[in-house]
Image (cartoon, rainbow, N blue to C red; front, side, top):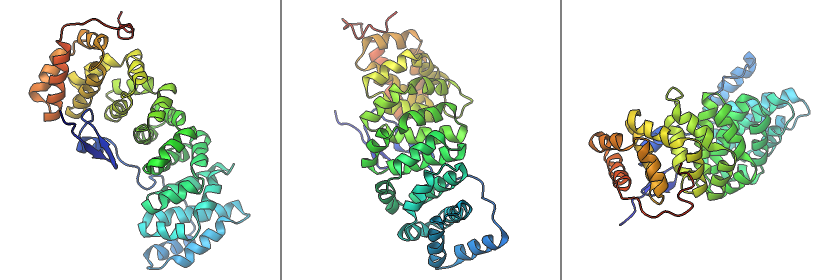
Length: 350
């Protein structure tokens, strides 16, 4: 039988994956920074307004890049803040700023011991990374490791913007492994578990993209991601059920992730989502349960004992077309006679 393919953020998905439209709406891509505007003096504000309205801001950009090299931390902060605003407010400035040589000195600021200066540098790099032409240059200039350090020890805003910047860089396929090797995955898992709502959303989106690479899936599982994801899926008030479930759906292509999902109590949570979740939540939960059960009789028994069949039957009658298909396949598996099982299959059998 042929395999259906879907695309999201430049990535193809097989038949176990939710359709393109629902995935895109579950994840809001990291756009320009959403932090508050930095305070500026009236003359500086006028200069920025004139620059943003001007057809040619090259002179100001060159001066700001020069100021990034200043011995004065305050001048560096002001230059980074203005570059951040120029890159946020006028997309065409992102290429101009990069061509003016701003990326390497901004990366140096990301490594600063001054937390505010670090935050300004991270945020400016994020806004520059929104331009596809800049992504490879930012990564090749050595931004990944400093961004990971900011993700570890920066302010809450720096952590959130570093997660977004790493997401943008991970959209270049060859950067995914480098970001994983740099130690980003455990830090993103920590942000997913303990960050504010924006931090959780940014971390989940970054992890969703990074974990298309097998080695990053393994890093995430080792970092304890399943415990965090199951807790978020179980909390219908968290506004994270969809996002967490999509990350789970990416991870469970590896056996270690399936084991971790079951060990952390994921099966009853997924069955509850099929029963009481939104249409999109029911669909992704059915897909994950199907992935669990397709090659493991012990997991089928576990899912059936949790009472999955009645809500799955209901899903075949009222779900989306794709949800109906997955629910029907899963019901068929759950109703099959139990066959001889291997030792590995009965590991989770009580």
